[in-house]
Image 1 (cartoon, helix red, strand yellow):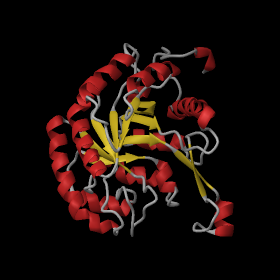
Image 2 (cartoon, helix red, strand yellow):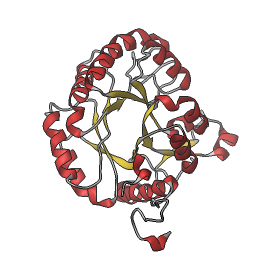
Image 3 (cartoon, helix red, strand yellow):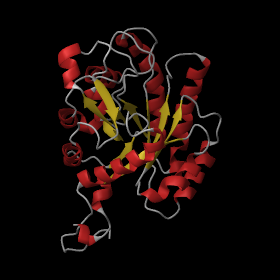
Length: 310
């Protein structure tokens, strides 16, 4: 029986920079994740991505797990040696996504360092217009994560796609239908933006979703503001933060999103280090419940798991 619930899969990110992505899939593939996002930090380290993709697919085997998206995080707009590796990494990911079974490559736009956001637009248009053509030829979508990486409108080092006003600008520069967002509520909550209405406005541009949440400490804001010494927000693993994931997933479904929500771990101040996978597995189960739980067909046929738990 097909499972319509899995039109939105719940998975997690795995590092691919060190060459052990397939090994990691083998280690955690039995835990219930339905998708993986292998990601590279700034460089692929010269790996043969065709072989890596085949190895990852082999590690999945006959399990119902998909790789829908690859991640390539760095600054492809600047011209330092590592920036050039990031740009080449984008090209290699686009060219080899099909070996993983992926149809999307996600990451940062890059940025002209230390300059106002709008100063990056000419370089953005130059780089991403070319990458958009490359992706179109390969049938691949490009998705920009909405993370500021501690930047803002006036300055930054990594990414300009972190604010809805910036999205308007970059999508005007590259109006291609296959360029969109790798969206997550956390980075909008850091700006004190209500994330859910964004889905209704930007749904057609959401190509991939990161499972990351935030807890806003309103008591700190009321006493110390947002520029004081006390953190006013903590990034959290979904299920431990403030976001209404039932509402988020419902809105994604309502607007036709079909893809994965891949958990971005390693940020939670509590469920980290020795508790990292405890938190991630708890988050996976929580997001599956927010998705609606196990699928039950109209004729009463049960789609999976233990029916006594319904």
